[in-house]
Length: 201
Ligand SMILES: C[S@@+](CC[C@H](N)C(=O)[O-])C[C@H]1O[C@@H](n2cnc3c(N)ncnc32)[C@H](O)[C@@H]1O
Image (cartoon, rainbow, N blue to C red; front, side, top):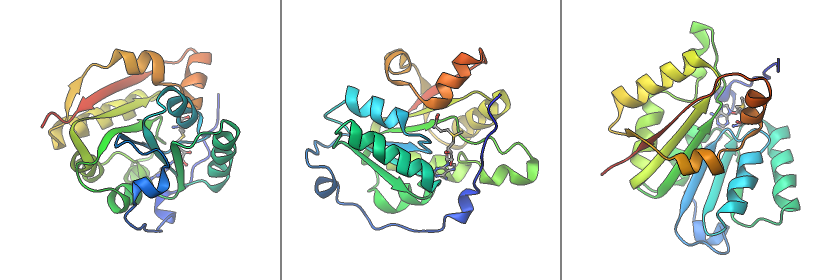
């Protein structure tokens, strides 16, 4: 069983400037996707290769992992991915206009199982409401985890504290969802819990 190396996201207090996406992405075409907690960056590379017209921004608090992702992105010669070191909760709030994002991805977030540590979880009512505000109408939030208790916690928050509506997107889960933790979950024959939530208006 893989042991999780955890870094308290509140140790990353850096705030960000509002981003000018056409100056960051040479081929910006208006479709923005964001991953919170990209780990090794395998989803960033996989998604960016499959969707060359989309612009993908990723946030990760662990410096070594950001360096690893930057190396993979450079090796794949991708110009439609922008990895950012820092707390994705601040990044989403500071860098993006409201109603500007098409997709937000949160895959296998750290579970922080002890009750006194649960405030470090990425999914909180305030963060889900922020995601809802930053999504375009028709935008979607994708969440996956291998921890059942965390799935129930996140699903409850999304469905009770936002207007985001559970929907189906089998094409995404069959073809686009590929992360280091997803692969480990499959290798170890453990259960996977996932859902898509849409901003309908
Ligand atoms: C268990 S790993 C999963 C990585 C990847 N999503 C995957 O599925 O392979 C969770 C990652 O989220 C990062 N993380 C936790 N809180 C974060 C936050 N607030 N902002 C950005 N990254 C965060 C952690 O450093 C860790 O690398």
